[in-house]
Image (cartoon, rainbow, N blue to C red):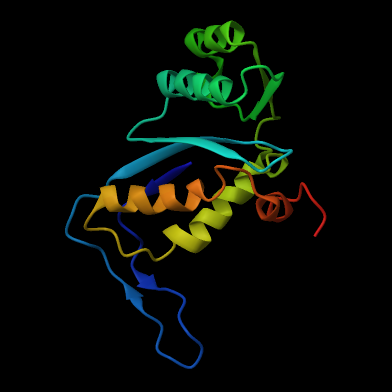
Length: 165
């Protein structure tokens, strides 16, 4: 998932009966952050990395984090068809760590529950945020949001449709 430090200008949500706040561009550069994450479909635990770029090296690093969290468990990672998921480096790391990639059909993001986590993140944190002046602070706020799922979350599993409501 990608997010930017600058927001699109416009109105954001506000209290009923009051003038909604207006989001304007900041003066800093529009810094992009990429996030790679996995969500445990049984516990709701989220493991993630944030970086300026997210490619084959970061994906291999994420696989290593997954294996650290689950040293004995058989691990399947559901992922889309991003080109670096098929790179020799990423596939070799997956094989070395005994992680089995499961590829979704092309253009079928609705099949991946983590897409709903991104929707929640965008709704609660990224839409209309006020951190355009400080991309590092934005990353910290995103990390705080994702860290709430570090030990698992039945609320997250319900939100993404893996538990009944």
